[in-house]
Length: 111
Image (cartoon, rainbow, N blue to C red; front, side, top):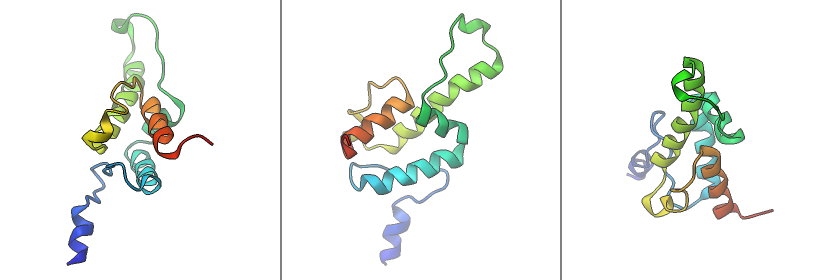
């Protein structure tokens, strides 16, 4: 019967690991692996920050749009993984990196 709890927790390769504010080191590691597995470029956006493009959006190439979209993909994955009570801490963030850094600060503090 205990194994049912393990399965119900949501260990899916298609769904981001859920974070409810508990066991941050474990959840952080799982999310890092999940993001890398979805698209390594998405993880790089979380780690390094979004690609900033200037100029008229109507003039952007498909490649530029694809690269900008990586940040929104990462933000979406992080938002889908977080409990509503934790969401308020990151809801105003403008990038996936900012969200990630804010969660680290909230749950790991400063070193």
